[in-house]
Amino acid sequence: MNKIKELYEKYHEIILYLIFGVLTTVVSLIVKYALLFTVLEASNAFELQVAVVVSWIVAVLFAYFTNRKFVFESKTNSKLKEFVNFILARIATLLLDMFIMWFFVTLLKLNSDLYVVIVTLISQVLVIIANYILSKLFVFKKQNKIT
Image (cartoon, rainbow, N blue to C red; front, side):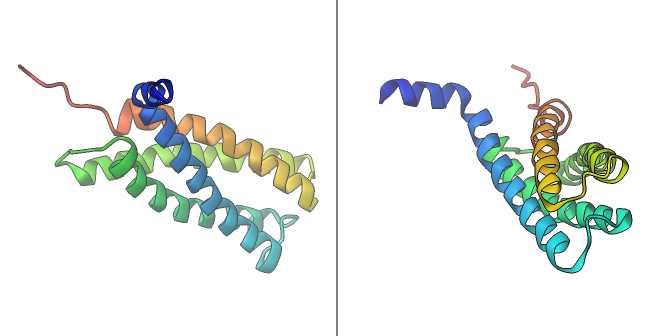
């Protein structure tokens, strides 16, 4: 039990990021699939991108508040700057997600429900990794304390 506690203390930020990353992905997937399997068609390139963007907006809002409070425990007074940097970093990974979906689903025509699910899951793994790196390096940087 002590070993588990030591590992958690050593890697708590990454563990929490993964937990909230998975929850963010679940939020994104629920929104995306709800749209694609009800009112939008994955075979329609425009509708596919609408589903990606709407799911992204919902997921980004969820991710910002959970990452700020629980993962990186941000204490900055520059909340607006932090939020803008978070949005900019997430726009970069949105473009990555959109490119992956366009390339495989639209260009390669892998637009059956099964392929949409598989491509989306692969894309989400890449997006989670990129989001952590961008959040750690550019958004929730720890302030150097002057002693």
